[in-house]
Length: 434
Image 1 (cartoon, rainbow, N blue to C red):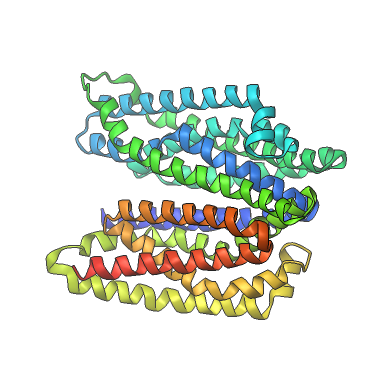
Image 2: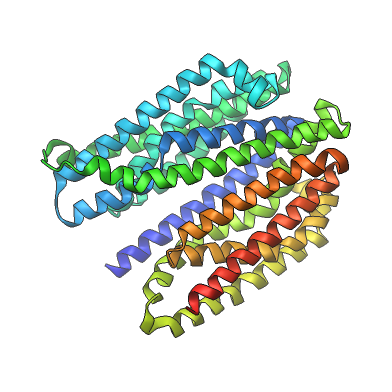
């Protein structure tokens, strides 16, 4: 059993690292075509997409994984099948409503919520992905619960390959008509990639889960059990997603108030949030695929008899992780011209990389602390920290960026990372010594 769990975790970690690496490299590819302004438009679209996805999925992936695994453990196939049907129906209805409303009000959304009418066609191309991703989350939850993680792993590789081919072809066709059409091409390619992954998972789910879907059950508390797990996750994630979306929009508005043109405001948003920050966060996303292995170890040692072993493990995690952050920070600080040229084919990101790269050790410490707190069962504290940080950033952007421009935004990013790192590290220390 332990070997099977470890094998599954390693497969997920490997596939996650490969998929995220490819996604980051591909971001560099299409940023060369779209430029900073196009990346700014993408940032606005992705902000809205995060809100839509949070509402449509409603934490159902986590709920499915937990509930189905419990019913499979009890060999209650009918209840497991009913849980899957309810989850897929729920996410499909929510997604289709969001898709319909987006198509109906795309002009209003782009002009009044995102403050840029050019993104209208793009969000119409992106919103179908919400349906495919929502169904995929539920199907992945089933495969995780049944310990058949190779299917989700393969689906990630398939998604990235289809997305790469689709975006490459669509960019060549539509980018000559303008940057907004180039963004729509990227969003359409993402939807096509998500569709391929969803189709792949659906085919193998229908084949693998046939006994679940054909077995009847009298269980009546399944809907309430799903809502009990998914609703709190959806509410907290939705709050954070809305705040992050507003942050993107307010940055552009604040830059305009500072005196920039609309094109320059979007370009600076694309430069910071579309290029610089993804480059700095990329090592953290790779580490996140590995730290999933850490959570069960922390959970097992979080008992009164294992507190000493727990503290030893936490020290080892920080001892290995933070120096890694220092080494990567040094590499980015010393070679910003090389990295920027290699990934984005431009050098205007260099000054910001040199300013922000010293934050990487703090970002590593914060990421490791979040993984530890997950293992300790401190999700509510993490949610409170995240929402507080998002709210403070948004307020600071509204107050200071219109007067001090991009310098204020850089300061806000620095302060935000220091603030969250101090909170999470302090919580780890307090919880492990309680």
